[in-house]
Length: 269
Image (tube, rainbow, N blue to C red; front, side, top):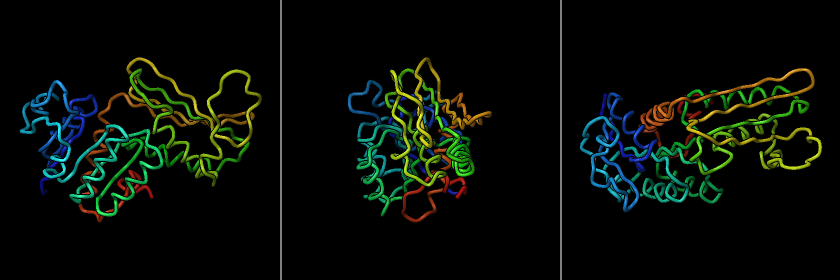
């Protein structure tokens, strides 16, 4: 097995540390570079030591460009603005970039697509294998059931999450909309508050919950007269996201330039 070298941006954060641990534990993978924002208190420390797996020879720097000069694959679970900059670096150096960043706007998504002309980019609202199966099931169920089945997507995350609904919830909404052969923008029901009147048929609603240390719970509810179908995924550890991200990087290493999804990685069509 050939060695794949990795870089992690935001390596001192909760998700970043989980990624470092997963890379260190995966045969054929080696962490060679890690970065954090300028002024971070742990700059200069070894990313492996920060993550609790011992020194890996990857000091925490504040220059993300160094990751793309050094590593074959870079994993990014940061912010939309930072991810756009990282995508440009991936394009410049023709690297693999794995993007788990959520909350991106259309212009930022367009920047990723442009970078993917020369880089290999895998982007997914959720890197979990289970969640990607849930996306597939959601589309199939929505395509099978009629508009008399109301669709509601319910998600809960920890109190520190800054975007809502979650990227995964929006991804589930898009999957349901594809099943109904319409863009989500036409079917999405705004957040409810006050006297909203009866529910319009055919729409896709969202409910967002925040609290405690919940890693990520997502449910898709199909409700009609007399019955209700619920598809649910609950993550109890960020490790499932890290495992998926590393798997995606190893898969993308041998591919041509392009913008891929976890469905491509998992062979889900």
